[in-house]
Image (cartoon, rainbow over all chains, first blue to last red):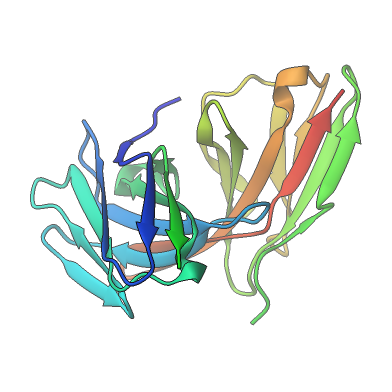
Length: 112
Length: 114
């Protein structure tokens, strides 16, 4: 099945550092979503983006919907240990109802 | 509001058996989608139900089926289980407003096929 290209695959950073990850697609999407998944749990929605160029923040998290509608990025500022987990981007087109196409994931590990 | 609930959380079956997984969406959400998550393929869309009708379907064999009840609860069935069906099965419910559709996931059912 199709998966979006997400990079980096994994990151090992120190507490307090900023983190940046991005997601690219060969197709256009009308909605970009960012999720975080902890081991053995379902993905938790972090940020939803609905318009090209949109920049949205949720606490220390900031995400942007690319102008071309084929990419999105997520920034985490001043990382803390509880930021550890796997981050997924997901794209959706209006014509395919609620079907989400997910990225390959970015595994984030934070050290003290 | 209670979140999306899935039962059971863990399941062990043997090849050839069939299995039924259940999902209760967030109250008021009429759309329920199912996804399969494996280390090799990541998160893949199975199907979506809206008002008891399948609205969208992914690229999975016919052994994978689902249904939705009038109270929006949904079940997913996998028949003639194969080893490769071992995965985390996730259910997501969504609410659409002004063209914006936001999906919320349940904790998943971990299926192991022996």
